[in-house]
Amino acid sequence: MKILFNAAISANIGGNLYKYNGVRRNDVCLNNSQANNFEPINCVKYMAFRAKPDSVMLLSQSDKLLCAYSRKKMISPYALRTIFAKLAKKTNAQSAVNFLREYREYMPAVETEVFDMFEEYGACGKKTFQDILIEKRPEALINLRQKQTEVLHSTDDYIFSSSLDENIAEELLYIRDVALLKIGDGTFGRSDVLEQLKSIETDDKDKVGIHEIYKKWHNLPRSLKDYDAFIVKYSKFSHNDIAQRLLSMSVASVEHIRPYASGGQDILWNYALTQLLYNQDKGDMNLAEYDELNPDIEIRKNLPRYIDDVCGEIKRGNPYFEAHYTYPSQLRQNVISETGWKSYMPEIVTPNLNSREKQIQSSKKGSNRYRTNHK
Image 1 (cartoon, rainbow, N blue to C red):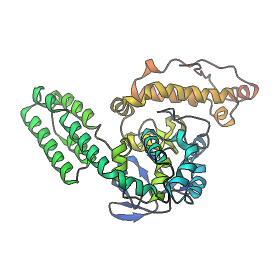
Image 2: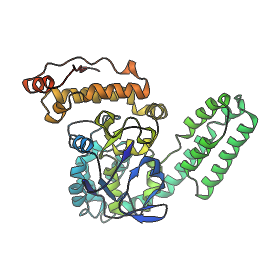
Image 3: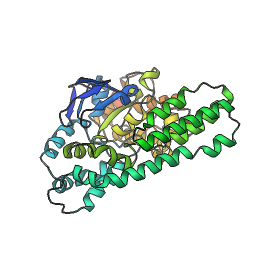
Image 4: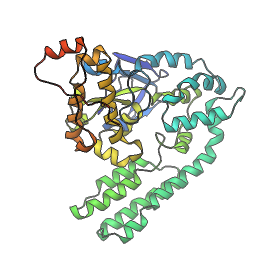
């Protein structure tokens, strides 16, 4: 699971650079294992995709497919530069809302909620998105701290009543108490808490308990998934940064089914198209684990539908997928190998091939089976 960036496919998301560990740079590699170390100098500003030929061509099909994880529409990375160039001219909230309205269906849940809030303001004169978020920030900060506190306390009963080793339980309570103090003084970091959980040394007996707590604390709100966290974070950003952020997570990206850091290959059958939100949020996490931590996305239900969509493109004579007609069956096998989800991935049945497909099939050895009509 890696997104590489350079000028092969580019989208200027405002023009600024990134800082990685304090160093400014514009040759950003959004490798998900490093995602938390990147700090945008105003917002997510510069994206330029560097990809292998297969992934470049797969991205070119993003306007024909829905997100493999969420079934949301995706914005083609090829179109993003033009969209953002037009959006930059919308210098107040009302004009930006009017422009963004046609892209609302592409927005993930949090961005949709924020956009609807902006739209409810109606005719708001010369106010910018930042002005509105600044007004909303005090209430959002109170709500955010309350949510963070509730999540951290949600495991108290489990810690006290479980069979966890006493020293492990004390360490967990210490991590919780430090986190609560940081919430109070505004220095809290969700990723810090999760990393501390991962670093706890324990035997097999306590691993299950630690994992149960990790699943709970993984729900600590962050701007990718929480309305109040979004407001608190982006109230510090410019109007144009915020406007672009409403769309940037909707852009199509090449997701590695088996993470690159875990030995996943840069090869077509290890690729699926997803919105950047999920690619960035999943990072180097195993797909089955990410699905377990995010049951609301319904990945096990949606990935088979994505494969059906590709089969549909083959049946309609899409030349790219015709040329890669083994992609659905190979992707299916890769998903099963990575996750064990065989019961969610029914057998693929062979479609009726048109003359062009027959030519392609006859030129290759072996047979291919495609699954269709999976609901």
